[in-house]
Amino acid sequence: MSNEHIRKSIDFYVKLNKPGYAILLSGAWGAGKTYFITHHLPPDTYHYISLFGLHSVDDIYAAVYSSMHPKKNIIKRFTRSTKDVEIGYGGLSLALGDFPDSLANSIMREKVESSKVIIFDDLERSTINTKEILGAINKYVEHHGCRVIAIAHDEELSLDLTNTKEKIIGLTLKVTPDIHNIYSEFTKDFRFNNLHKLQKLKLAEIFLSSGCQSLRILKHTIEDTVLLLDGIDKKLSLNEGAMVEALSIFIALNIEYRMGNIKENDLIDRNSQIRAHALSQIRLSSATPKEENKEPVISQLKNKYNPVNLTTKIISDKDLINALFNGHYNFDGINQSISRSSHFVKNNEKTSTWNVIFNFDTVDDITLEKAILKLNEELSELYYTSIGEILHVFHMKYFMAEIGAENNSFDEVDKICKTYIINLLNKNLLPTPFEDNFLDGHFRDSYMACAFICYDSYRERVEFIKEFISEQQFSALRKKYPQISNELLDTLKFNPESFCGLISSDYSVKGKYLDYDVMSQVNVVNFVTTWLDLPRKYWRKITDALEYRYGSGRYNNDLANEQKWIKDVINELESRASTVTGFERFRIRRIVPNIPEASQA
Image 1: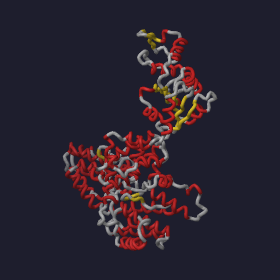
Image 2: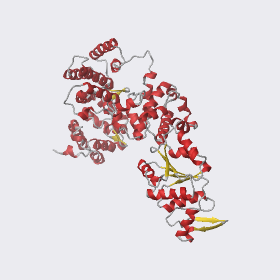
Image 3: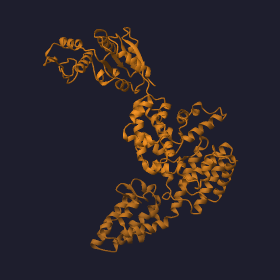
Image 4: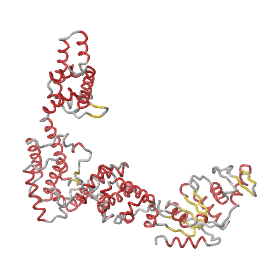
């Protein structure tokens, strides 16, 4: 059993009468040294003294005195003068502040009972000099015959204590975490019942693989894992295979995050990082700088945590990063990712052709060749219209050109990709940004729980293609402007407040068409007529919406194509005002939008 030799040594030590030396418990920070000794010895057999916050040797003596004589003294706080410590003899209590300092200190140093072990903890968290601490320990060991166990959480302090000339420390014992037993202790509460039901989940083994010895990290990891598990839908949590895969990667990365070994970028496109490094290793280009071939952190961790699958997308990169680095568990997204994993895909469900090629590591050659042929057929048939899937296909084409699986150059792949998008646009099959806003998201490097296969050799080309797709999606939107303009006029007529929200903003929420020059297609006369036919309480709201729309530089940038339109609207309002008199003219002129750029010659 782990640390059994330490248990035996301590059991032997505490039975000694005046051993003449102290024991030092050392070990990595957070290894559970305090937990170990305070759980091994019965509570009534030791005095536990934390030196945290103590500033002088007198504070140490006062703390020990307080523990040894709890009924005879009251300690309000430790100070150098010890004036707040009271001592008692036969029911008579006197404050030490009433005694000279030398006498008070002498009483606390000499009135010592040695029947219990003294445990000194947190030595490195006090401001007392190491030699002075050793002097106090020596006083209790040699002068009073006490048994003393000191706990040092700092390796440098441990060396100072063991290298001292006085040899006060007669035995140094290094504690290593007994992970399996401590894991059982940490998870004995009923809150962990669901965790225990996953018999194939090897949390303790994963923690051991990490090499981490901090029980604090173990406890935090367990708590985080339970938090994640409790947020997963019941029907999903019943699939043990899915839970083991999802929780295992979360546990491993949680440990590494808490150890400070990973950053957010290390978790993005993990599979691509590993593949890119593997590909760079087989290239014979001496022009590649040495630092570019540095093994990615995730690649190193993959070997460390084998057989945990650290490249799985059963939880998306975005949700993993948010959970680990921001403490935000997006359970809607997490449940969606898990439900779309292979654990819940029925055998008769169709697998996308690009996905077959994506798994080239495990697919046989005949199946792979058929998939490549089929992928090219699908491209000619304009089969893919989802932007995420299109990007998977395009990345696959670049990847196959990179490794020589197809006889295409990168330039030829560029042309294939652009032609495909143009053909979709011409056939009215390309989704607008409103119909598919994948490229507007922060995580544009994966889709359907699969990272795009992207290498540095064609990364810039892919980014260019993404921009090209975005531009053509806008073109697809412009083709629908006539339809949208009619819809906006109807909205203005029947729901003017909704119209204002669409073209400007609504309670700080950006309007759907705020940055799109769709108003350029709206008939000016019909617009003004519909506006003035509204109940007058809405007139000013339309004005405010238009003034907001053309503010913040949009007039000369995103909405430059609407400059003529808004000028015509202003002129039409002025014309309508000139045909009436009195209040009616005044009302119309008051709602003419004030847009400085439009009034300039």
